[in-house]
Each structure stands twice: as structure tokens, then as C-alpha cells.
Length: 211
Image 1: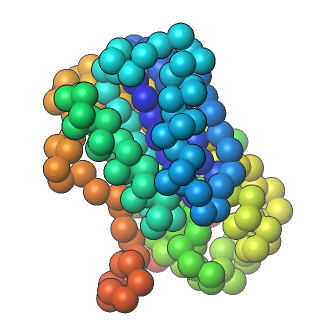
Image 2 (image 1 turned 120 degrees about the vertical axis):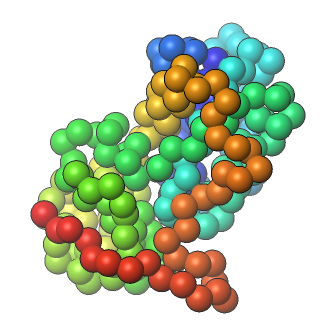
């Protein structure tokens, strides 16, 4: 069994899949500030509801962002804790890429990077970048995109659908572990930070390749 965790936005997701990537369960919900209190209980409920036990875990997939700093840290901590405690492999999967794969009709994935900025991954691009809210609204306001509801409302993304990338993360993790059972180094795996946490300097370079 593969467990996948995605908490890159206020719309969190968990998924369980067979070792070959066949879906077992998917859970999604909205939580702005309670990720640390909700992720593990919901994961345990999903495992129990699927008639499985954590000892059957073959690997862990986790969304690496970019996105919510708090959500990413909580998800990464839980994923690493499971991998370490059960001596299982862990695989990091870029969250925005997973969102796009889960919703093939959309043209870009957008995650909040602050009150007036967002991370954007345009379909066909390899790297998400940081841009301002006004530009996001102007370029993507009328296009089909993946974005959490609270960001879609705040940034005027009229054709947004919510992220559902957990099953994609589970499937990608299964494929990766099939090719390399070692997965990622649990000690080195970190969230994708395109913007430094508050108080630290740093900003990505380059521009979004707009549609």
C-alpha cells in the first residue's frame, strides 16, 4: 500500500493506492489552520476504512509544493515520520504538477504565496514561478485553472477547480518505487521553497511563460 499526502494549499488531500498504483481511497477537505491536528487522524481513518493497516505500508508519497509553508512542513513531517518509523521509502512529488495531471482540462495550477502573490505552473512548463496577484488575475482570470477556492476568490480566477492531486502523488510514488525501491533520501527531502520563509531573503528569478 502507498500512502500519499498533499497539503500545499488550504484544500488538503490524502490517498491510498496499491503497490501498482491502483486507487484504494481518496480523502479531500478544506482546512486553513488545522493541518497539524487533522492530517494524521484522517489518514488513520482512511487506512482503517480501506480495511488495511499501517504495517502494510510499502511507501509514502508527499507533495513537495510550492505552496503553503505551514501545510508543506506539516505534511513533510508526517510523511517523514511514517517513513522513518516504519522503515519505508519516501518519494517527493511536485504538488502543482500533480494537480495538473489530475485535471487535464486545466491550463495552469496556482497556489498561494502570500496575500498578493501566487505560485504558477503553466501546463507544459517544468518549473513553477512566483508572480503577483494582479498579473495572475489578468492572465488567468478567465482560463480553466487548478487553484484552492480561497485563492480563486481572492485573485478572481473565475474558472478554477480545486486541487485533487493526492492520487496522482500516490501513483507517481508507486511508479518511482517500482523503478527504484530506495525512493528519496528521507534526510534530504524538503518542500519546494520558491519564496523564503518570512524573515529570510530570496526570490525566484525568471518569468512565467504565459499562455
